[in-house]
Structure formats: structure tokens, C-alpha cells
Amino acid sequence: MEYDIDHRPSYALITAELNQGDSLVSEAGAMVSHTDGIEIETSADGGMLSSLKRKAFGGESFFMNTFTAERPGHVTLAPPLPGDVIQYGLNQNTLYVQSGSFVAAEPNVDIDTEFGGGKTFFGGEGLFLLKLTGAGSTFLSSYGAIEAKELEPGESYIVDTGHIVAFEGTTDFDVRKVGGLKSTLFSGEGLVCEFTGPGTVWLQTRSPDAFISWLAPNLPSGDDGGGRGGGFDINF
Image (cartoon, rainbow, N blue to C red):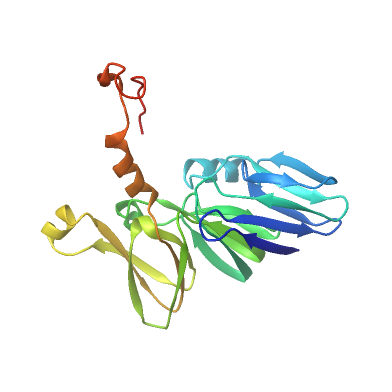
């Protein structure tokens, strides 16, 4: 499979060129377009139990779409949020991905969820991470641009939990406070994740949670009596 990623870093679009018999598995709703001769099969990838785990714990879709080329063609895919997309080639190693960043992968990539321990709960990212293993290309998305940070053995790097996209399985991590109690409560940073190499960590330059926190107070509500935006309620 060959691919292009266009319109980076704000509105990335994946174009995957499939030879006859090639397949690509994607999140439900990621498809933008495809050429004639591309068959789509929707299924609970990995079985009912794995799909339930991804939906309930990993924040991903219950169903996955598999695109298979009956003759050479292409399929285009895009994430739901404006931002970047990267390709990562798995080679019998492990990649951990935050909820919502997985877009697509080749069929030989196994997509599962793994319990991350209590430290991920306190990090605001939930108790489970998506765990990708096997061999093949996978495509990951961000909100904003993506920045890669390569860590040497023993090198540490600190990232706000809302800006994490993915990290390699060789990388250790721990969640802690940004500073003292005052900094944790009033700095606006809350908790951070400290990664220790070797391995690569991918960051996103914007945080969906931060955007929602900014947006929610500015949305019209029923209390406006119809004065702003028709007086409707939007709840998060």
C-alpha cells in the first residue's frame, strides 16, 4: 500500500492507494471518498468482546470499516477534528494511542485496549489506552499539528495529559502534579505525564478539552430566553 497525506497540518487528508486485494481498516465515519471497485465491509473488528472493550474503555467506535480493492484504486480518509495526521509503521512492536487519535491501519495491525493503571485515571485520559501491535502501517490524528519528541535512554520529557497523541511501548511514563498544590490548582495545567526514554512521544499542539472549556461558557443556553442564538441548550 502506498499513501499520501495532504493539506497538513490543519486539515490533513489520507489518500491510500490500494492494489488489487489490498485492504485497509478504519474508524467508522473516517471515509471521505473512494474510487469505483473498492468494497466496504462493516464489522465488529476482532470480535464482539474486543469491540466492546474499544468502545467502552478505549473511546473508539464499536464497528470498524474494512476497505478492500477488487481492482487498483484509492480511498481517502480524514479525522473528525481539524489537525494533522501521521503514519507509523509497526514492525512487531507496540504503540500506545490516546482515545480518539486512531484513524486507520493495515489488517495485520492488531487493535486492542490495555489497562493503564490508576496513573492514567488521574491523568484524565481514562483507565485504558489503545494498544497497537503487529506489522503494518497505522495512521494517527491530532487536534492541531503533531510534534514528535525522540527520547534517549533515561531521558525524561514532561507533557500535559491533554496534548498526548501516542507513544512507543519502549517508553515508560508516570503521571504527577505540575508543581506544588498551588500550581496544580491554579496554574491551569493540572496534572502532567512524565515520559522516560528510550522511545518516541507524539504531541498535539492543541487540546480538545481546553477548547471545550473555553467554548462552553460562550454557548447560548435556554436561560437567554431566546436572545442569543435562539435560546437552545448545548450540554457537554
